[in-house]
Image 1 (cartoon, rainbow, N blue to C red):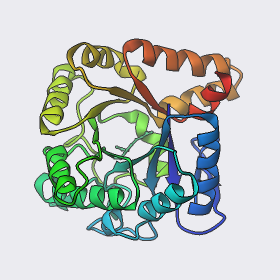
Image 2: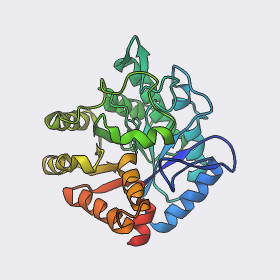
Image 3: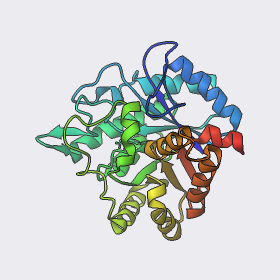
Image 4: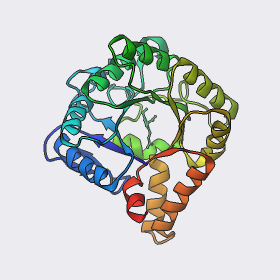
Length: 292
Ligand code: PBG
């Protein structure tokens, strides 16, 4: 299990995310403490998301050498050695408009965005990331990131591609957590249509051809059929992302006494695992580790 964490500027900051009880926006010092706990629980690792000081049209904070995620990586690598650090490579937390790439007219410019993604991935690797995970869904980004990493000597840094990522309503709470809701339109021109199963397989195939080492199916519970299908078709490690909305629904129902929290957590994760996921990105990681 891999725990998603949100890092923000400041010191001593630990702000609970309203729609995701038990999850926090944390400054680097607090993040380090959280990571110590995660390591102590024996989790597989963490995946980091950043909230920058400022946002702009060019997502500068995403690929700044001293960006928020880059600073967090350096600190956690130093203070919590041995913990696996994955970074989410995307622009939506860093753009003023909240889209995952360069906006031209009413749409995102796919190819112009590839350069930002490649630079972000390289800056993460430099700062201490063990694995980079592009989640933007631009076509060709895995190849661009692979080439850029190899050019500067990071051929050993694997790419965990969010290959089958759907335009899902279940990302709702995350957009509060990462302050990344699009200011206009939606992500349907670059994320996938929930009705398209075969397209998901094609996206995975393309990402693997471009050099992805592992892939993610996201969200998890509404897409168990695709986790299974990917498991049957592709001999690579397959991850599932149990996303914010999946987490918050269980928490909310449990808070109302409508469902048994511990059992719901475990049953949801077992289902994802049974479908064929080798590992799971989940906000329940710490809870489940304690139950186990
Ligand atoms: C960035 C990104 C998102 C999530 C992971 N990376 C948001 C989105 O695509 O809108 C969602 C994770 C979650 O809901 O837990 N693009």
